[in-house]
Image (tube, rainbow, N blue to C red; front, side, top):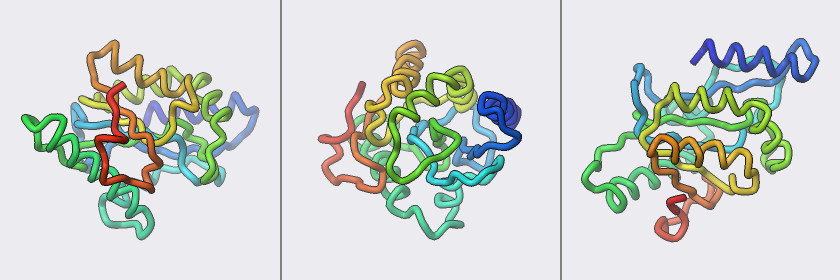
Amino acid sequence: MEKLFNEWYKQQCINENAKESSFICDGSLSDDYLEQHEILFVCRESHDTALGFKKYFWFKNVVDGLATKGKKYYNCVKYIIDYINNNIEPENANIDIKKCGYINVNKKGGSSACNFQILDEYAKKYQEYIIEEIKILNPKRIVLLGKLYKAPNAESIFVNYGRENNIPVYLYDKHPCVYSKDMAKHLKLL
């Protein structure tokens, strides 16, 4: 993964004609190497735009109890996992958050209000890197968090990958900070 991110970051700097850019790493929520992740959670972008290559991975810090902000994201992701365990795949009801992966489509980051046009252009430009990251994480399921359908290039990368590899892709149509107890209404198979 580190090799992929280094190449991606270099290409991003070349494309921007800049010595330095903003790049936020993400990936596995496990401390151990996993050949396959139970669920790949897909978000739009981090809210960090400071220049530099950042190896810290905010949501992993939340899962590990090292970050004070992010409890709502954590609760939403746990609730989705519990819903899949209990309602969609009860025969496989052993999904643990530490066996999941997490990816932000736009590694440059952005503000709390996502610019879907920029996100979609980023996804189109860096599609090969996004697909390679999905391959490395090797998910059994993919869950798109938030309104990723507003960025059709970004959404189609994950939906097409799922279809081509026989992996179920779900859309949780709310922002991960706003999780719903009525998961059946908001978690849909694409």
